[in-house]
Length: 109
Image (spheres, one colour):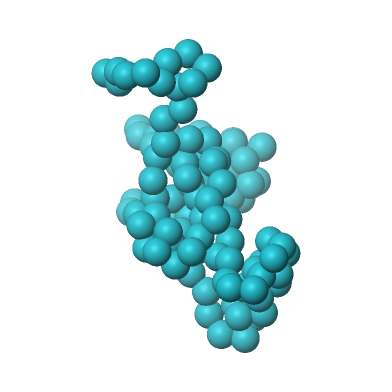
């Protein structure tokens, strides 16, 4: 149960990713995505427009490595004997071959 002054149109629960506090300490600018507060980009001193930050980050990743917290991406939990066939009918790629405990990106139809 959630209670308090934020009700009706003012009620906006916020979910934080595991890297939220780290990202905030690094100067992240956040965007709300499906109740998740996701780091959109990391502004640095002297960057007056978001595009400057994004371009700098893209160059850094192309030249080295980057980190992306995908907590905000959708997840589903399906169970049962025919789960592989069920997922094969929902996705373009084969899901029936996916082992338990593994993940796979897929395009849902």
